Amino acid sequence: MDLTRDAAWTLLTDYTKSDSLRKHALAVEAAVRGYARHFDENEDDWGIVALLHDFDYERWPSLEEHPFRGAEILRGLGYPEWVVRAILSHADYSGVTRDSRLEQTLFACDEMSGFVTAATLVRPSKSLLDLEAASVVKRMKDKAFARAVSRDDLRAGADLLGLPLEQHIGNVIRFMREQVDALGLRGTL
Image 1 (cartoon, rainbow, N blue to C red):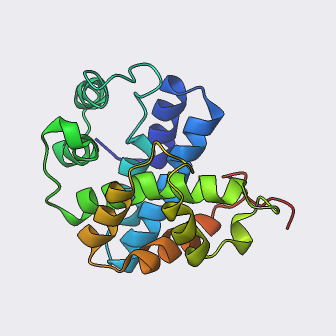
Image 2 (tube, one colour):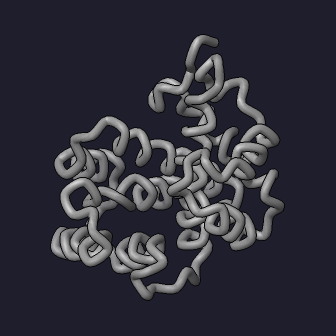
C-alpha cells in the first residue's frame, strides 16, 4: 500500500467529525513531523502515523476499544504493521511497548501537543506565536489546569526522547507554529 497523507486525512475525516479532535491530530502531526526532521527520519511516514493515531477515538473512546478498533481498520486497509504498532503503542494500556524512535516520539508529542494547545488558549492573545516553554512549565505546576493530562506522561515523553522537559516543550511549540493557522492558534497576533 502507498502511504499518502491525502488517504490518511480522508480516513481521519471519515471517522472524526469533531473540529477539536481533527485539530489535535494536526497538532500531533506537526510535532511528530518536526521531530522526524530533527532525527533525519521519513517525515511523511511519521506524519501519517501521527495524523491517524486517534482517528477511531470519536467513535470508540473507551479503553476497551481505542486504539484497538482503529488498529483492526488499518490492518484491513493494508496499512503496514509498523504503522499499526506505533499507533497501538501510544496508549499505555495497549500492552505494546514503545521500542522505536517513532513510537517514542508519538507518545512524547501526543499529550504535549494537547497541553501546549490548552496553554495557548488561556493566554490573553490566544496565540501560539507568543507562547514560551517556561509558560507551559508553569502551567504544568498548576494541578487544576488541564487536570486530565498526566504530568508524569509529559515528563516521560521528554525522557523517552532524551531531552530536558523545557527543550521538548520548546520543540513542540516551534513545530506546531509551522501549522498555526491550520490549528486555529494564531489568536490576536
